[in-house]
Length: 405
Ligand SMILES: Cc1ncc(COP(=O)(O)O)c(C=O)c1O
Image (cartoon, rainbow, N blue to C red; front, top):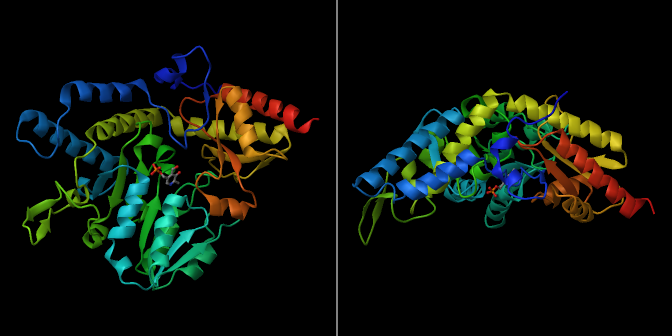
């Protein structure tokens, strides 16, 4: 099986230095292909203005471009309309808007259900609400599969559940949750479903209508688009119940010193100047990803993930926390027995290998795993078998340094 990336040459970072780079940290931020950098550069040189404000061509054209990108994003996740797409700075900002803007969470009673696998971004806002009200935070444990324990979820959701907030793909385990089933259950109890799609969006086809979710959030920087962009999908029903949290320019119909009326539609959630450069980079990143998907990216990454899992298992002395699924999903967390994850990451860095070590902003999940930290490798379009072979060389050095003495 030839696991050589057909996309690696699209990423200039690999040729800008004499030193090799084995980048295995795409779940933190994926690298940026030249087409995305070019789109940003062209925007800054030729199209930069303030959108949604001016009548002059530069501003009006940018406004139109951003609205076209809203439609492109809607298409990317199969949202019913561009009017369901809110631009912001990332997943964290999207979850904050929901947690602080949803009317039902201001009632002061009921419960919120999350899973034990959540990134802190999808835990802390709900924890805060529970601390400051009579709303109870219920945490569903994980099954042996690494997925949300569905029988437990059925027991924890009831007619007082206000919202269920779960990750689509765990940023530690690389395990995909059965979101459509969770959506069905959630609807039976009249609760909202928020899906944290920060990791999944790069690895699978998102269809918010088939998933039956009310909110879906993701970040551009994990989608080959650079930093600064994020998307919150909200269904029509959800938008009707969501109040703006950040107030200011661009989100109003009329303002007097004593009262104000918000703009209709999603613009009321986008106060202040939009980050047009990041949105244009997002558009270029999504186009790039779509093309790569058409060229077989998902299958390639699933094969490379399986190859990695097989190599790590054969290496021995490694505890792998990621559970194998029918379609392995590019994220693998592990520990080298008796070696701290930080030591592993530092030795790997000396071998030009970039990995993440620590709790990956998912401390409760690490408590469940019974470890304080793990080493995480996460794959992107540029990765290939060579990266994994180099990883094994680095791990062998760790073994020699820390164990075989
Ligand atoms: C599952 C998950 N949720 C949320 C986030 C937060 O994303 P951001 O930092 O882009 O807001 C991350 C980032 O790693 C993540 O992996």
